Image 1 (cartoon, rainbow, N blue to C red):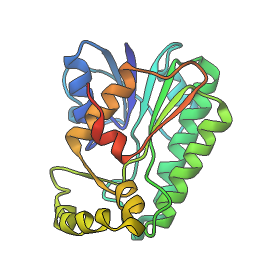
Image 2 (image 1 turned 45 degrees about the vertical axis):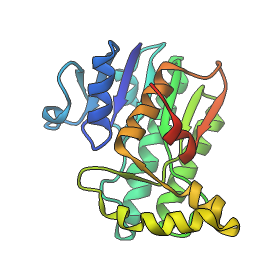
Image 3 (image 1 turned 180 degrees about the vertical axis):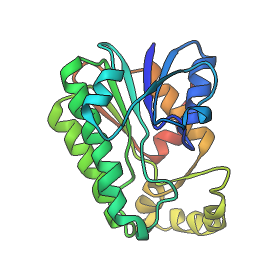
Image 4 (image 1 turned 135 degrees about the vertical axis):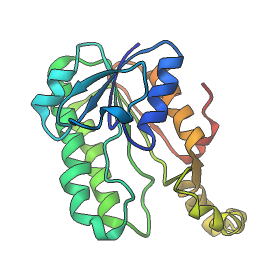
Amino acid sequence: MDVLVTGGSGYIGARLIRTLVERGHAVRALVRPGSGHRVPRGATLVQGDALDARSVGQALRAGDTLVHLVGTPHSNPRKDALFEAVDLASIEATVAAARTLAIAHLVYVSVAHPAPVMQAYVAARVRGEAAIRAAALTSTILRPWYVVGPGHWWPLALAPLYTVLEWVPGTRGSARRLGLVTLAQMVRALVAAVENPPAPGQQRFVDVPGIRAAVD
């Protein structure tokens, strides 16, 4: 498939691109000047600005699968302003570009919700989902809560608590919805989304249990 990845130099994006290239897909990565060295070999670099719809549109081709991974790194409540300026602005730019170019499929990493913390982050991602829905794009929306991997191991300390909460009927649903996924599981779920798109015009949602269960 022809795949354009935004955020391809990041935590998830670089690993996804490497996997897609290994599986034979033609991958292009939209990158800012100076960040291309972080994109795995095998992808074609396209310089541009993921916050600008015109720039995204120049990188897109009709029939593309577009994987949107732009986001504020190491999210925390002190970065609330960035969630709207970067996370929301980038998906809105992507949607605006995708509406005019007849792309095949948009894959968007949102967030599990509702959630008791990180309200500004959740709100930005929910508004991103709304923009996709309003544009009636064929889409897959993945809703992880926290992706555990290199540099992001600390939530594993909460694993015993998650086990207890999943045993209690009153908290089981929230514990599963806001559960942890590994970086490998996230990449696998993204690959599965790319290679198995929904029917044209349909919007598909993949929550934490679905991410964990995905197979490539």
